[in-house]
Image (cartoon, rainbow, N blue to C red; front, side, top):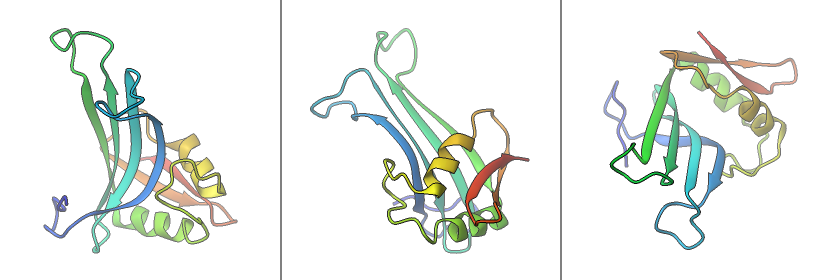
Length: 130
């Protein structure tokens, strides 16, 4: 289990936003595997992490595994948890609830230090760069 860089408490996945492919080494793997997940500790220190695996090129030409991450403010973690209250399966990247659809559409793509989460009038969460 990972620990929080801020307080040392354990972190847990809050929501698995998306996933593509099968992990390297597992039956059915076909070159690409990636996923985006938001994590937080009990004190609401959080992050969004995107993992990307691509073993198309030989390993000496480029890294097969790469990570990107964005810090979530405590307010963003609280808003994310609030926005997921009606999600039937926060850790299912194939979930088609309004929260998952919105988070997939707005997930961080540009490297920024911090990311916020806003809630629509209907309570649907969306990412926003700070």
